[in-house]
Structures are given as structure tokens and as C-alpha cells.
Image (cartoon, chains in turn green, blue):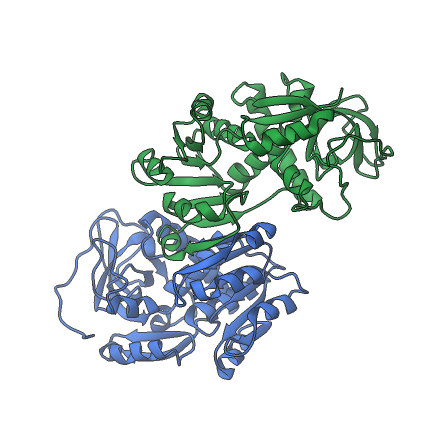
Length: 313
Length: 313
């Protein structure tokens, strides 16, 4: 059962700040955690919420460069769906200029996930081609825009005509309906037959073989979700003939120094794109925190586009 | 049938040099090519030989920085088991000081393979741990020494007591007999339980799952051979929980500019280690070119250690 209840106020330790939460957002990981499939890392609150926005209300020992009252957003290992949350200082980010405080809660997870995978890991470059699965999701809408801003050609998949249209509006050159179109053929068509340089995948097992076949020489498949299962046959001969790579990553269990490095790269690289209007946060629905169960249902059904935000009223 | 026969002399085109071959070496790829399983890339001689040493006898148009008479060794896409071979200039390398001309023929393939995969691709670093399969092979003997010179801890596998002893002499901290020991357990034992950071694998399918389990967080599995098959189930959940990667690569089909970049990195990075005595070429047997069939039998049986060299007499 999901409920909004009274807890003791947390206090910031050394190198932490206390944030009064204005908003959080729902992630698919929240649904898995609710079902007991994705427990928080050791020492982390079992309150849901992998991101938030709000104002700093207290600084722990040794924190500099931040001020009480400052509006921020933050990447969290948990605990964001609350009135107060303690955040390691390396995961606190300023709110990009032009983004309102509630909307800023929709940025940390997709911003850090997309930037760390496409830019820091896969080194997606101008002139390359990216295939993004689930282009209308929170991750997808951010990935399409970031890749377009980098100068990459984007091919994406989605499940409804409306979502496909959203993907194209955000910059996708090609958007295919995964119900009845072949994304491998679409990836080849969009690249003169050579395949895509990078794939950002959320399906895992069910797409593994097709993803490998959609890759170009020197291609990089980056798996960040396993909605289609966790075990599948890998065609090593094709991987080797393409000199390609399969990466699988996640954010939540990384050590603090890696999360801090990612947040710093996001502030340095992504925030300017948002402030210049090249990338915009896509929020498909907003609920008050007390209606978190309703928000989870929406995400589970996948009817939304972009992020689902939860506000503290 | 393998035979040493008369062919027309080749001539160097633009950006090529003609080398009078002193020696070549046998690679496992030669055995596959002999069986029709590994054809040369388009436009490449079907004469065997992926590497050679010798002296430059002619320079093609636009070649500078090299002189007729200069002793060299070279990475080839084929044709090295001959008296004369044409080499793209980016794949010509000086003979490291202190290495005799025949022995230099044993360096290009293993040098470029090991350096490109461990250093340029996997970024193996001091303090990390490397697992090398087939540690007594040409690739293995080079990888053990290069990793040790970098300051990495090396765990290796081999099939006989004698080969295991060779691996240890070359710097391996741990050498396990793949016939009756568990390399996953050995990899964990040698790393305080955390697993290895990089694996250089020649087996492919049969080792895929165990290799994934032997990796540390942020580990990189680099597959350069598929002696154990080409298709196997990949455990994506374990890969993701480790934020690890599976790379598969080969040298032969790369474009000239990539081969040139690798050769330049080898000359800049590996040759100084050889000249300082930290890495030495390991040659297990030498045959005259006319006994190439005998040399292939030795490689097929795997009784040798290091490289098998073929000399032109």
C-alpha cells in the first residue's frame, strides 16, 4: 500500500544538505521497489523517490557553495517523496534558468541517466545515429532531445500514433511503432544501411539480438532497463564482426563519487542546453503527493508521455 | 594444401612500401583461413601471413619517413608468408632496439592485439586486475607482460603444468589449469572477492557466463576469439548489476586509418617497454617457410608456448 504518512524529520550529516521538497517524480524503479523487486541500497531510506526539487533548509558540516533557501533539484537513492530529504551534496544541482521548481523535479533522473549513458559512456558524437527505445518515456523524450542537440540522427520506437508524433516533434528523424514495424529495418533505412552507432535500450532480453543486428561497425548497445527479461542469447560472431560492445548500467547503486561526477557533468553540459531552449523537460502529468497511487497506476499502464511529477502542497 | 611457390613480384602503390620478408609468424587465423573459414578482406592477397619482419626494398609514391634498406616489422591483412609483401605505410613499424629481425616477426599481431584491447579499448590501469585466457599463447604471453608492466595484477588460464609455470615466470600472480580449476573462483581469490576489471578472452560462447561472473563492478570483458563457439546466453541482470561491458573486436578487417593509429600507439607505448626489457617477445618455435605445414600442425595441436615464427632462408 502506498501512503503519505508522518515520519521524524531527517537531519543532514557531513557533506549533506537538507532539502524541503517541492516536488518529486515517479520512476519505473519505484514500481519495482513497491513490489519488492528493487530494494534501496544499504543505508538509504525506504521511502520512495529517486529525485526531487525544493529549497535547501539546512547545510551539513563541511558543505560550501550552497545556501539555505536556494532552489535546487537532486538525484536521490531514495526518500524524495517526502516533505524533507537529506541529499549528499554532490547530488544537489541548481535549477536551470527558465525551469519552474516543480518541473525541475522531472530532470535529475532522466538528465543523469541520459547524459551519463549517451555522452559519458557511449560518447555519442555529431553525425552519428542513435536508436532510442521507448522514445515517449521520460528517458526517451530526454534522449531524443539531447542526441539531437549533439547533432546525432535519432531513430526511436513507441507504441501509439500519438507517442510517435511526440517523438518526431522532439527531433526524432524516424519513429517506428514497435507493435507492427521492424526497428532493425528502420535503423538501417535511416542510416543508408550501415546501422546505428548507439542504442539506448530499456527492454534487455527480448531486444538483445535485434539490437545487435541494428548496430553499425563500432556500435555501442547501452542497456539501462530489462523490461523484456534478463537472459538472452548473444550473437558474438556478429558483435565481433562489428567490433561492437554491449554495456549495461544503472545509476542508483553507484558510489557517491560517481554520482557526483555525473551530476557535475549534467550541470556543465545539459543545463546550458535546457537554458538555451534546445532541450525541454517533458512532463506528461502532475499529481499531488497524496495521489501517488494514482500516479503509479498511470506509469504502470504506460499511457503517459514524458515524466509524471508529484507535488507537495 | 600449403605450399611455398613462385608468384609475380608485387609493387607498392601510393602510401605503401615493399618489404623483403625475413620472417613471418603463424596465427590461429591462418588455420581458419586455410580451412576457408576466415577469408581475407576484399583486395587483400590470399597468401597467408598476418605479420612479417624484413627490410624495405621500395617506397610507393608519397611515402616519407622510411628508407630503403631499413629493418622493419609490419601488421598485414595477409600476404606475409612470401619473399616480398606490399604494406600500407601506416602498418610499418621499426624493429625495437635489442630485438633481432626474425624475432620481430612475432611482434606485430600480438603487440597490436594486446595494446589495442588492453590499453586503447579497456583502459587497463595500474592497480586493476586482468584475467587472460590462454596465458601461454602468443597473445597470452604478451598480455601477461604488458599488464604487469602497466601495474595490473594478472590471473591467467592454461592447460598444462609447464604452460602454467611459463605464465607465472612472465608475471602472472595466479595461473589456473582450465582442465580442473575454476577460473571464476581464482579471479575472486586473487582480488579479495571483487573480481577482475578486465578479461581478455579467446573462447567466446563457452566462457561467456563464467567470464561475466568473474568480472568486478565496472568490468570489461573483451572477446577476441571464439574458439568455444559464437552464441551463448548473456546474463544481463548480472552485467547491469556490475555496470559492466562486453566488447568483441578483431584487427584484420579494420580500415587502414584505425590500423595506422594502433600501430602508432604500439610504437609509442609498447616498443619502449620491449626496449627496456619489461616485455620480451616469446617465440616457442621457428621453422623455415618451406615447413609451414609442420608449423600449422604445431599451432593446431597447441603444444607450443608463445609465437611460432617462419623464416625465409
